[in-house]
Amino acid sequence: MASSSIREVTTSATLEEKKKLRKEFNYFDMIFYTVAAIIGIDTLGAVSSSGGQALTWLLISAVTFLLPYGLLTSEMGSTFTQEGGVYEWCKLAGGRIFASFAAMLYWISNPLWVGGTLAVTAIAAIKIFWFGSSSYKFGGNNVTDAIVEMVIALLFIWGTTWCAIMSLRFGKLLSVYGSFVKLALLGVFLLLTIAFVFGGHASGQHLGASDLVPHNWGLIVSAILPVLIFNWVGFELQNGAGEEMENPQRDVPRSVIRAGITAVLAYGIVIAVILFALTKDQLSNATGFLSAFQVVSTVLPGPIATALGWIVALGVVIALASSGGTWIIGADRTYAIAALDRTAPHLLGRFSGRYGTPIAVNAMSGIVASLAMFAAIIVNAFGTGNIATLFQLVLGFVISTTTLSYLFIFPAYLILRYKYPDIRRPYRVPGGMVGAWIVTLLPLTYAAIASYFILWPTDANVSSVGRLTYELTQFVPLGIIALLTIVFYVWGQNEASNQDVIVDIAPGSEFSAGAGE
Image (cartoon, rainbow, N blue to C red):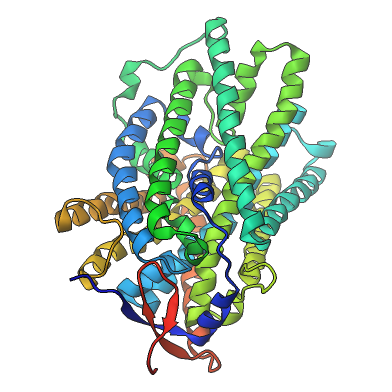
């Protein structure tokens, strides 16, 4: 017989702050919120630059990673619906220390992403479509260029952060309308590409059917799979706001299915078009999608192409902001709940009574993103001077922290299946425990491979920066993150004012205070 509740230790601060939450997240919002989380245009070039085998692995990973990952998330997200999603799942599975590392990795990758690859791509979009080239220098020199880039990036970062600080009713609009803008950009790109190809403009060596066959395993494990996994993740993000959903038991599985189908179609069609419509020498890395858009827009008369370029640049910035803002909204709530649960200073978990959002951790995300941006721009201006190299370094670290967090999340599902076998699950992965093992091991294997090879890539994939430089940019920050997690955990455990409280968790419901401590 299915159990109606389980018991858990939470804290007085958690119970107090959850009183500020508002149910403002409906089914329609959840679909496009998840679409915004999964579909990103900043890495389309990184995928397409890997050649035809990237498309092959996109389709393979859609079946062997995205599908089981979606099934797993549908069960977890509709059963354990507490605010903080990922943190709560990992805590129930492995305890607070286990969950604190998962939450830190899950959270910190996002401000680094916003301040790194997203800000870099936003600047590149402005330079390409407004000034004709990603190598354009504002003011004609490195100093002025760096200053202007910082101003643009700060506006991008804090505009995105501000949307996360505002109420979910407002913040989710960035995700919803940002999804529309992304799909519109991809639609316009497809139309222009069709005109480009049939107009006879795509001359040169193209990819053929033989290029689809996997053949360079070093490239596959070091570059293709890590970026693909990074692109696919995001199903569980909406559960960061689990107690702000109107009906998570019903809506989580449905929104995951629809968002997943949309993502597969969007990525599959666009990457296929980029690969087969453009010539090999037109494919690039950091600005791949932007450069491809610029190439196919040559089918238009000059003035129209210029005007469209200005609009596209604004659309790209909005699309990037929607990706970053969506992840900030969900991941910040996840880390706020972790902080309230004594794995970090509970001040970081404080929610605004006015907006119902975790303003402290939102502000911390903005600060971390700004620091990452300053470092990236300075290194680019006075170090490598190469935006593709910068993109590789920043993207590598963002991917590693993201995939490492899933090494905690995926096993949590299987542990909870064994730990609470009789709890009522509104949605259950088909196939019993065999099915549960399959949907755990498949995505877990991908996450493990991606984590290992993004940290220790093959020599060919770090040739532009050197192995020592690349690995220092990966392992030194990871060491700092691990140390920070431990310091925050000790800090949170020693806060005498935030006491443990035993609660009953009814699947699909909020906490209710239990008997005794």
